[in-house]
Image 1 (cartoon, rainbow, N blue to C red):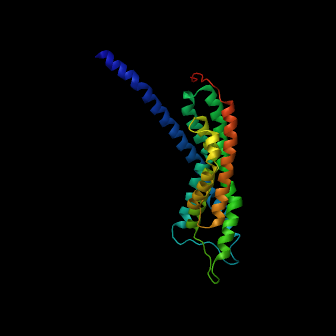
Image 2: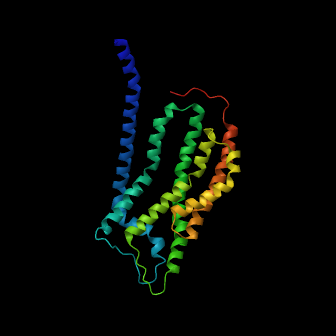
Image 3: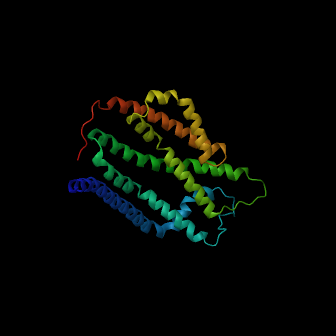
Length: 255
């Protein structure tokens, strides 16, 4: 009976240690976000002006953005600062996740995982930058040009913020498609040949996702769907290369 209890205690200890380590990693992630928020919040109003610049540049002379809620002038910049803090802390967040899972990976998996992790960060930021510099001017130009004559355009600051954050997230995640494609190939869930054979369905799926994640206009839908398709093709190319370099035998996980 005593031996059984000791054996059960030894079996539970690794789980408890993993949970404690996970808690510590999560606390570090939260701390990183809070530090970034403390550094960003004093500039929240200036950052809101910067992020709203693509729309304000296209408004007719004499028209500007408004706040329809009495609390919007405070909460809109606050929300923006918090989201930007999460974006800024993404490298630290992903590093903490990497540090948590790395001990259980094989050596060749570590050699592949770290470049994929680094690339995923860069791709997410590139997606957000693509939305700001390419998509926003085209979409807002389209919206401001098709309005009925005599209608005064006074965009609400909270509605605008919700819109641009949704677009940032949509394009940031869409730009992760090459990473997802490579991971599917490396884990054996599919092959580059199978993905290439399903290309017509992928193209249709990209336009469906573009329709769901963007406003109901063909410009923004196309601006999301086409990069998604091109990034999928890029993922297949790198998937071929990764599959070719994948070891036939697996070594033991590093401690």
